[in-house]
Image 1 (cartoon, helix red, strand yellow):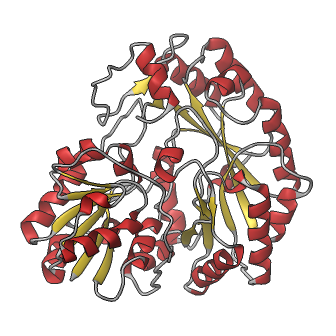
Image 2 (cartoon, one colour; image 1 turned 90 degrees about the vertical axis):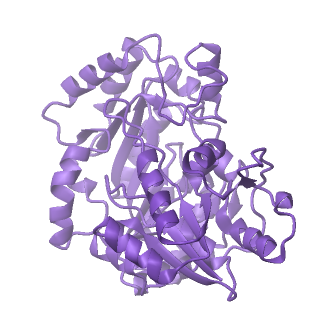
Length: 449
């Protein structure tokens, strides 16, 4: 039986993201299945993709939907039309049954099933594909498999995956070479689940609220495998690497023991760290810290249900700088409680965060299964039966998105280390040139002032 696993994400800004999830899905399939992973980033034309589909002739095509839209309230772009084109290409060039999955699909399973007319879907972790294929082969009841949906069955019983997790990584895959040649970045995961309750965030819904840790030694072995495959930089994809200070420090120690020598980075929550925490990580090769700061107004931070204060941000920032690390902060402006004064508090507070890069996202995307969804519902910004797969953003009564944009743009004028959004215009113009010249990693550190 042939299984084609497709990474449908073609977004390369600020840099392309290796489809790690499909490695785990492929790792869950046994030798009964002839499995092939493809990444749409490597195809130069629709014709080349269609030729590959015809040549492989899959029985099942698993489509991983990561990004729903670009989350940009000003220049909003939904990726649904691209996914519809992909499904049409699969249907036209094969007889494969189509199975949807991925983080984006998990947020909107019913809507995507209807919009793409898929045969099956898997809500949550994709390793359950092996259970679905096994049930289909044996003609047993697929309705007993947690997370599986069909055209007819749209009620979802979901629970975090508790089976064996194996990563199938093949350095010879074409898409691996693409990432190695375009920035040299590969990625890995150290845990699943997020214990935080941020009002807008979908991670607890996608992965569960309980953290499930990979053994540090196995993580380090995976990092060595990526290094030996030619990776020049590793990005840790956890929602927050330091959600557990103990486990993340153990991972760093395992990196040292395994002789992982390439630089790495990840997302961090700006809570107050234990003594010398960032120095320990820097000694293990950490070079880039990306803080999900969101605001420097304690009022807004409380409304976003963040586990830190503006003062905590300053402490975490200083600790990271003192460890010799490159630091970036991401801000999410326009959430509940945002007004002209809270925005000014944030922008003024940034001046005290020295030697860093700042990314500003204006407007907060509303997703189901979040506290922000409930707030928007109570305020009448959305209706209970409204389909919000087409992007819908929260609108703070205290300030308009246009006012936020204008204020941030005025403040950012002349500051190369202030980027609105992912810095798409700058990144599109500069990053490909730098990568062709042999630069590796995220590269935002070159903007630090």
